[in-house]
Amino acid sequence: MDRLVFDIETKNSFDDVGGRENLKDLEVSVVAVYSYDEDKYFSFEEHELPSLGEMLKRAKLIIGFASKRFDIPVLAKYFNFNVASIPHYDILEEVEGKLGRRIGLGILAEANVGAGKTGHGMEAIDLYRRGKMEKLKEYCVNDVKITKAIFDLIREKGYLWIPDRNTSQMKKLELPYKEEESPQGQLL
Image 1 (cartoon, rainbow, N blue to C red):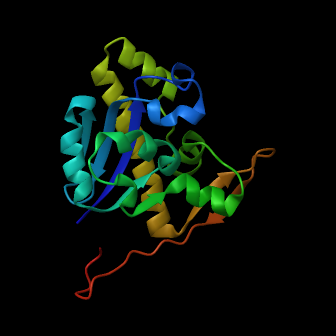
Image 2 (tube, rainbow, N blue to C red):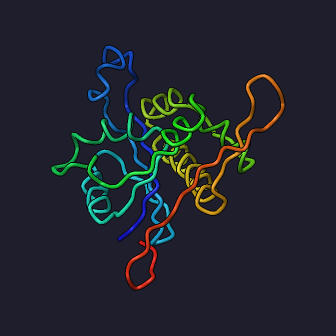
């Protein structure tokens, strides 16, 4: 069974659907995924989501950033199975639980992997509205690459560097992560 790193972009914003309380009314424009089993990146437009659904059904773990509170609730309506029931590692949830506050993906990426985001969510909506689907896919895949790099650091080192808000100092945030092994000694 596969481990998948994923991110979604939407066609519309919170303003378009009447606020954050209407999160489930957002519509997917693109989903990008990295498959550890295939060592490959994929992107899916809304009409291709059934193929994504098949990948998700085979996943033993999904990994995202703010994905439990954003991506999964938006994606849920597109599948005839409970996508929220797939084992899930949400990097932001883990960081927030230990740090006591939220921190952006771009800030974490710059502090830990030396690369930042290439844009933000509103730019992604604009790309969709202008029909720039290849640029939108590139943007979404880039976020998955960053999320994967951060997850790999957590798996390998057990910590991330967090920049202090008021100084140029970095704080080491312990984030222990343990892969489960099968009885045959293979990573699950």
